[in-house]
Image 1 (cartoon, rainbow, N blue to C red):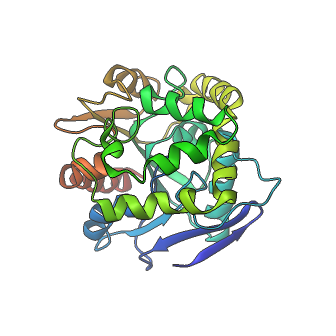
Image 2: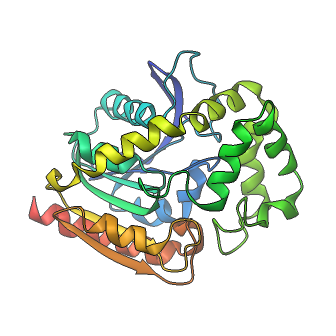
Image 3: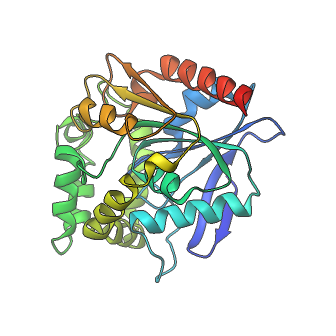
Length: 282
């Protein structure tokens, strides 16, 4: 897997390559890029798919000691990543985090459209029971380590306060093992995640400030939400869609937050259709 040397540190990523229209896909806390594998496997035939693993716990290279790992800091890392790879005309696709809203508020010139899938908002941060649980753990000395070591017990991964309300269907153990291994084995990776989790106040404020500027984002946006989501309530998705001047919302049944895991075929079809229509209007 290639790595991008950024100011904050090394970011690993996958890239299907080519000169086709580019889609950049990102995930959330303790979720590796393989979340997107079923989606990328289909989209790669028509699009260049780039999947960076941002420093949210599933990354394998610790960030520089002084790196800003708050939500705004992650957006800067992503912006540096897009610049290093010289990506333009990007459709940014995210699931779980609120980075897309900060990117929209900053009017990032490299991004021409967005797909926001069941994600954090200013009114839901940290999101739901899993978000509040891990944020609380980060306040305690050794709390993140304790929380992650407990997830070696695979049955606990289906608890509502861990991944049980993130994915409606169990994520394969081998995949979860890969996502969690860096946090369970590397103190520096736990340090990175703890820095992010302890930035709640600054990150929430950044989301609130971004919300007031979303109406100025005049590019196409697709908001895709799991209708049964227990972590990101569907009402927050409808509200978010209403803040963009060119947004359309799609609700997907029989899924929780991690739509790429629960409903990859339907999500892939929605992304493909959206990108094709968006490209035809540019």
